[in-house]
Length: 149
Image (cartoon, rainbow, N blue to C red):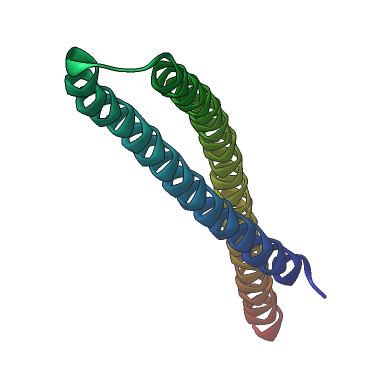
């Protein structure tokens, strides 16, 4: 297998890795969006729940009912805190995925540049061989012309 074929194989593998990293980034971004939406839904639900019970508490409420209300609000707050943690973790995964994608794009660019250099070197070698052959042909013709006289 010549060097160019090896580089082509390497390029294909790096492109596949880059594409996988791009998919990973999109999935991580989708996960962040879902986590944010869930967090917003929890915040909205807590707000609605408080508003609903404010009217109830203005009329009258037993201690048991008040304890249940505060217990549920506390669990909602815990769920919101947990969801915020999940969102932050998902955001960290996006940053990491973005870094991996950037690294993969750099690798693809490096292999592409190496391939371009290799092609340029091959062209230069071919041009030198052709020039050498042309020079040798010219020398033989000149030598033959001098010795035929």
